[in-house]
Image 1 (tube, protein in one colour):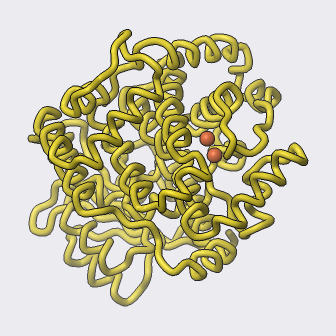
Image 2 (cartoon, rainbow, N blue to C red):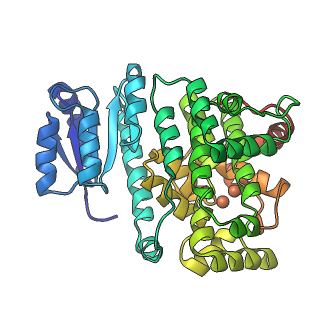
Length: 409
Ligand SMILES: [Fe+2]
Ligand SMILES: [Fe+2]
């Protein structure tokens, strides 16, 4: 993008701001940067000038970072919101996760910060491109979450809430609990050799992050008409998504990624095909045609979808998750899960793990509503230096299917 991007930094510690200013000096050609010490001042300058990105400290005197970014989300939803925080702020980070696109730890490294901002800008440029806005303007409504699901999600995001409490609330909703039991039991064939019959057990078995992602998708799928659920094999699709979450996490684990990234991998895997909900509910005939085209012409289904409705389920899914307020790393993995090479990263990332996990599972557990599944791009994996891991990841998939899934959350 040729025009310079506007970035606003907020921190009540002038030394931190001076450090950022010095560190990011080489970026002044591409970024127009402004630095303020109070949340109130940030809101004032934002009134006169729109900003592409705001990067705020969490703990500040007066208006804190959480209040600031919540207000920015309401007043300027298109601004990318990044929060600087320390590791000790974990409970606050959990509270903030609904209004923050991305967290960055303090003290931060210039290259990491630059890379994060550039990737977030590229992602949101793609999600707000003209083609996508055009298709979205043709939808009468986007999938919304039923109230019971929203309540459980709020509980999951409350740091003082136990998984047992979440399980009890889930158990009170028959639709939600039967859905969770069905997906958990069918996705993995057996769980420690036994079926799970109790929603409280199912939720604690899955852990916080996987439960959250499963409830998000189940909530929207629950709104689909019975005929669509059968035609598009929605139950199998959800089971595929659960396995992809478990496998993507296991792949990241095999490469010794951090616990935070393992959680991102679980959620992104479970949510990766969420955009198919938009296609099933709003463009069922075009989507069905895309599946048939893909199968008969050995052409990836996301390409057929782009020809039919100008956007693939991957981009639509990214847009939906952005609307629901999920963090950028998850949205990025979902948006690029069929073409991870489009989001520039030099090392193997969560997005790559979801790409590999989805292809392995589609190839091994295909259903009638799946399009043709392209082979894994070995040259690409080679370029990331992980091509020789494929055999062990196939074995991990086998373990995902027939053995106990990794406890997540
Ligand atoms: Fe997909
Ligand atoms: Fe998939």
